[in-house]
Each structure stands twice: as C-alpha cells, then as structure tokens.
Length: 62
Image: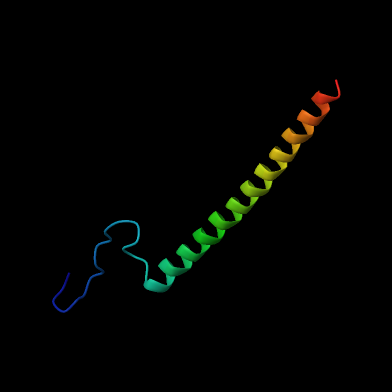
C-alpha cells in the first residue's frame, strides 16, 4: 500500500462485515422462521394428540 492509502479492515468472524441494520434484519428473519416452525410444531402436536384420543376411542369399541 502506498502512503495515504486506507485499507479495509480485516473481517473477524461471521458478523464482522455486517452493519447493525443487516444484523437486526437477519435476527428478525430468524425470529420469524423459529416462530413459524413452532406454530407448525404446535399444530402437528395437537393433531397427534387428537388422533391418539380417537384411536383409544376406537379400541374401546373393539
């Protein structure tokens, strides 16, 4: 580098090159994905419980 030149700082890790807005946006996206996956899990869990209850009722009639 010549005198007076400024170089880019070295990247140190995954978030080093990201500004605050980018990190916040990524965090919001991750939160949305986790929230959506939790909702899907809760729905499937409720359906599973309902199916188990129905199976027990059918077994009683046998």
